[in-house]
Amino acid sequence: MSGYARRWAAALHASPAQRFAASMQAHDLAVRAGAQQLLRPAGDHAMRRPTFVLALLAAICLLGASGARAQDIVYGPDGAPTVVQRKLHSMTGRWEAGASFAIALNNALIDQFGGLVSLSYHPNEWLDFGAEALLNRTGLSALARNVRADLRPRTAGQTGDEFRNDNQLRLGGFAVARVAPIYGKLNLASELRMHFQAFLLGGAGIAQVHRESINLCADPGTGVCPSFQQSDALAGMGIAGAGLRFYFNQRWSLVSEVRGYLFRSSYKRANDLTQPSSGSPSHYLAAIATFTGGMSFLF
Image 1 (tube, rainbow, N blue to C red):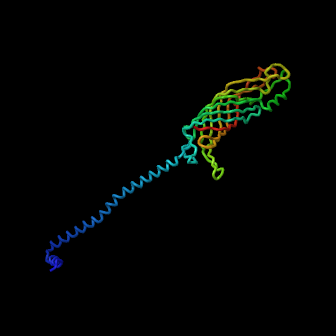
Image 2: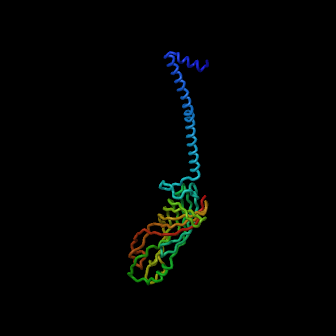
Image 3: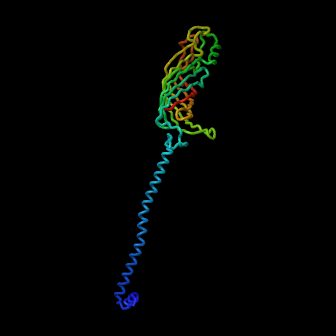
């Protein structure tokens, strides 16, 4: 009798208790085998999943770090990113030396032109502060000389008011700060792009103001005036203006500004034309507007 037949015969003659025990043993073996088949791949997948997630996070961090190094975000004075990123010409931590010419814009009685030199420091991309020195050549304009030529000879009892805005700004020293909230670029051609920076400026300082009266005589008496009243004084001044900086490269840039020098001045009212010491002074806020243009060097 074969082994297979003997097992069937033993099963038929076994008691109910023996058959129940045998069935429970077979069920337990089947459950263990199935558990091993299910738990092994699940355990392997669970071990592989944290490793994959960590590797993915590390790759994302590396990509983000490399992207941040490739393009650092530039923030403006309001704390927001500037419009033009990938700024070609960085200003942070650099000094700027400049030289410009200056010409007065708003005074028809005075001819004024000269030069301005400056040295400033840029602590960040949108702020700089420094010192300036101004030296101008000044004089009466052709209009002022024509007015003098048309003055009538003085007579006793004749009074008149002095002309205003005869201030001549000859030299001065100033502390100036600039705030540059705008950085942009102009596409002049397909391959020619010019980057620029727009700024506001303000400051204060002391300057020498020369005054030469247009119509008040320095000598008492009647008749034609041989000489006119003059004065020189140091005046405290405020500065306000705006400008543009156009970059050529990392070192050189073209700077243009329109600025106003504000200070306290005066003129004489009800002056007896034959008595220079007469009349009462009247004060006003004088403003000399100038245009400046020149070059700056960054280092």
